[in-house]
Image (cartoon, rainbow over all chains, first blue to last red; front, side, top):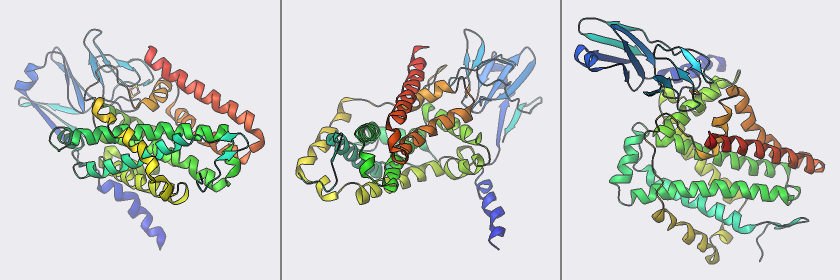
Length: 115
Length: 282
Ligand code: FES
């Protein structure tokens, strides 16, 4: 009988999982972004008419990424991994590109969901 | 003076002030922590902390005292452990009691580290993310261990906070039940350790680091590991950090290998401090 409680306990932490975050940036807000916008959990890059949205978590060990305006790189402050503005890996221990986030762009603005 | 424990091994006397300083700072840390916990809410960590240092009466002092005394406790306990190894005190102890002594150092390290995470400034958030992802690289056990001790991404700081509180009381109870005689510790001539520690936070500021920009530094005692992570797989770094525990324990299991084990320990510390040094250099 005790075994029956295993899946219950396994899923306990699932119950405390926070709901996915929904983020919306209006057309107005988007027009103010010059090239890059660092949100709390995401990075939005504007290249001409194209948008790229990435998770702000470094693919190495999850530190919050920052932007180096001098070199125009996205940099991880923890172990110095570097990425281009389109999310490609340049150097450092991460060894992977940034994780792209699915988003939807329409005439009202841009919406994305972070789970 | 009769302390109730053997204070002299064939190699010499234990450095008692180190032990008293460690215990006193631990007591101060736990008591200041109790008062801080009345104002700290794990679901609003940084806000609570900012409120503590700005609005709570003596809050800034309490926080600095808590921070400072924990650091002193950690450093002096480590030195106390090294002193006990150097003077072969483990020979006077059973395997189990030596295990608990070594274990108490790791518990204190864990408590201090979770204290950093609970600050929830940039150092805290980064430290939390790194430890969680590092544990997840452990095969088989990684996921469960993370769920029990951290799970910050899923559940916020609730687990970290409760482990921080629970282990502090566990540690202090263990130390006073099995290692230090309360009557001797709280005697008048030992109060000077308290009087020395209490005013220090008035003269130093232990500020938060809300934003570290392009280069962030974790807790000072894990800076070596932070540097190692630039070069090695997180799993190896994690095992490396645990290996000092094995070295400390081996002294009591292989007493005849004292010299070899001491060599390992020195090499370990040399490498670790080397990486720490490199971090600040580049
Ligand atoms: S967490 Fe970003 S490089 Fe390690």
